[in-house]
Length: 115
Length: 184
Length: 161
Image 1: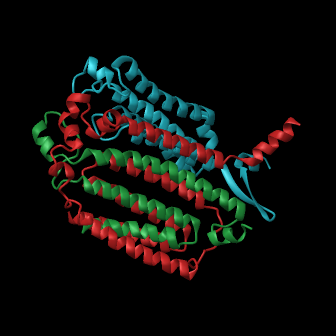
Image 2: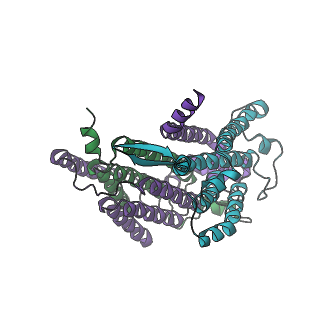
Image 3: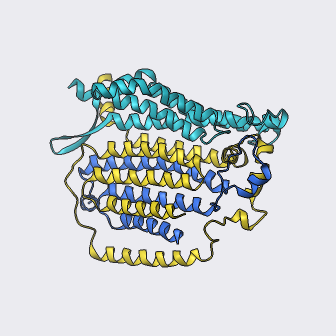
């Protein structure tokens, strides 16, 4: 059920990318899709009643091994979030260049001026 | 875990508002709320590392996006793309949605991760031997910088390339021209 | 860009060093508490971005210039690669944790995880300086309308005009 809600969030982002005309809205749709995917990967590693994968001083290691959530998706999502920041900067730079060239954010206008 | 349902519904509503509102600044701020809600959800999912990174990155994304949209042409771009393409994409969305729900039947239940089902999953090794092997109490840190450091090296390369691309795209033409005339 | 009002400037002056210190703390204790190089680097970049937003870019660029930021970016990436290559020289394989393997430190102390703390510092330098550089580029440029055409100019040139 909670996976389905996550898929709905992804679909909202995909709808924005496919249907919207404003290029900033398309970038926002891509950002929402990134959130959905990151959240879904963390859901896959969650254990009910689990503790964060950080060993505290004096903790029982056997008990920790039984209760900890999966650290691998967390490590991969950590790098993915920082990469998404660089990619967003690249996309916004492209948007600013397109605005400078055509004077608008509307992608159909850009198509019209192409020829 | 009812709180997660509340947070996810809040995120969906926020993203629909972000995509449907006319004002670009309001849309950008709505995406900001979606990201901050996402970071709260990470906290409830026992992932404090990612929650910290998500909050900070969200602030930076918000600043960059506001920087891009403020002082720009504020005339609202109304309407959608042409009808046929839009209909096709809506049908495509439904098809992807139905197949996605089918896929969830094969995944393990929420709350029972793969490390609980298979005892030889790699994460079990990381959890049980991480402190002894690397000396780091934070297992996520030991995974990204010791067990899987190649991944981090690739990440650094991708970030470097993306920033380089952004700098090359935004390089100022006007200053170059001025320098050339100055040299002449 | 002359900056914001007096209240914002005063608060930013009080808060900026605490944000910077918090970034350093997050970076150095990344192997014991939540955090690490990525979060610490972005927080350090945020402290300089606060300076740009509050005081205008001249004040922030006095502290760290654009060329210094791009050099720090390269230095961070090279430091990370150098730590990985030291693993080949000393431990025998790429990215091996040679310090922890040869003389392990005491658990739950600052100098306990071998190369992880060095890698954290390298990544913090790299991420922080590159994000700062991106923001400087976005802050300096501005699109203006000149006649029929749009042109991208640098703000300091417009100030001279």
